Image (cartoon, rainbow, N blue to C red; front, side, top):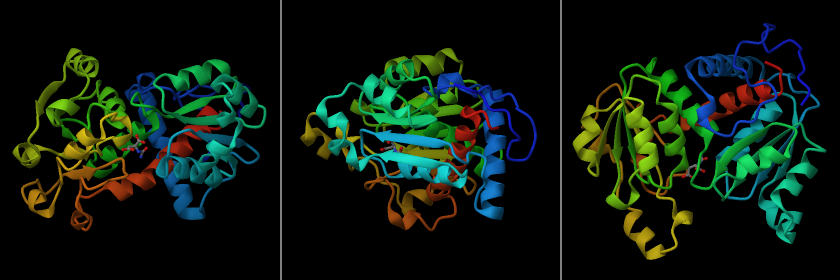
Length: 325
Ligand code: NCD
């Protein structure tokens, strides 16, 4: 796609994120330097939203948001991000069942059509690898907003941004991921994104929902200190971050098994009483019982701040892929 070189949000030149004209398909595309560049830009987006509500950086640019799976946060977050950058959105979400997609149109054809209208496509789809298929068909940037149980790179970026924002650094953090580590794509992406950092990881899940072996091997090969347990009470006092996830009902063929697993963990004020004073609880949301609402008033509960950070990070990513930052 055409790369436009106009002033950025604060008038400085390009800064080494290397994202202009690129797809965002996997966290493997990002390293500490490009992440710092994206996070710096997200900080600027936050400042501009707080000062003026937004900017006109992406005026007359159009985003097509194609969601084949349910979404509240991710779709609303991309829509809000695009609008606060002065751009507009073609939302194809609730309506997928009323669109040509339901007539049996192939994903490449849908994408080739949408790119005639839009400058960037955001895609959520139930199949692993779908974002890659879409990107191969598209001449505009494609952003993966979740490909089945595969990856969810923009969520992992906003998770990392939130960690840094809340705790000031990533160095030396002990991070526990709790819940459905098998199907939770946000866990897959965040775990991979953390590979180059000096962090210790503890994976907390019932046996059947353990992290896939290939991802476990990737973090072990990267030299990280990794542990597994099923017992959250055992580790809550040692961690700086508790990253809690929902059991992914839609990935189960046996709903009885889902029913047995869904209440496996609940983070309660009683459990939090054993946690460090300086730590954070994150969750990509939606929650369906893994964190008691009674925890929300705890200053360590950062999951709604995490939601807002998502908009700033997505503003940064949209401006970056469209060559405006
Ligand atoms: C996550 C997802 O869709 O993978 N939600 C989100 O994007 N915020 C997590 C989930 O649905 O459990």
